[in-house]
Length: 263
Image 1 (tube, rainbow, N blue to C red):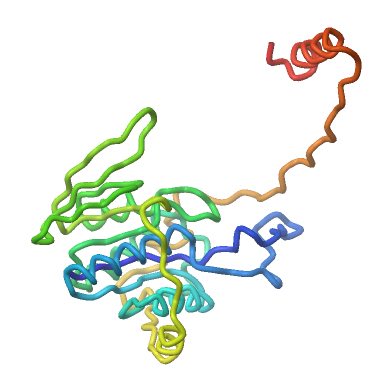
Image 2 (image 1 turned 60 degrees about the horizontal axis):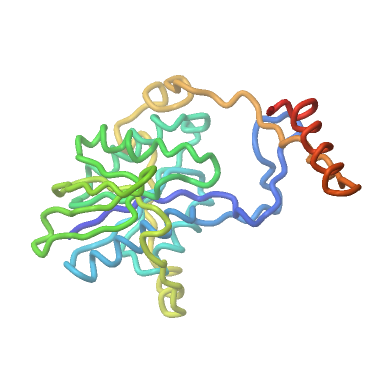
């Protein structure tokens, strides 16, 4: 079974985020960048399918040259190959543009399953997977929390956590899956895996290599645009209510009615 896993490099959620003075983006000076956490689970899912059925796991990413490090994380986990599309013409591309680029790469690769993280932790859009399935013409199952592939590797039954229950969906392969973090526990890269990953070549492609133009997938084709980033407002200090129980209840009710406006 040949599996393609889509990977994105994102800021570490544990790292402090600073916004540029003009609000146009994130100040990356000294910022720790990692593989998107959901994509770690997608990579693990791909590796487990390869262990069960044989085949290959190929990682695909779109981003600047530094995104190589996220791909090397996946290679150290055990992925076979990695492809990075890096082109300045993609600056300002929206999610649909990125999905079209990923689709162009994946169409050149053998794929029985395409696996993505449910979302990326930098923007939480959860758009790429669904758009990618559309561009590839594949059936899809999103937010997969449990995955059962049949013995022949021709399809899967997946469990999706929905409000108030679990949705069970059958999908034939080839298919696109986006996965939850609850699906599995990603393995730690071994020392031999890390050393091997350092020696592996990451294939670098441009839009020209894929037969795409900036007018098709770049900022000119974007249907959405980032207007401005701003930090959340500073949280106000808490308020201590003093007095006996009756006085405290009265004070809280007055706050909820007169200030919070929720009653």
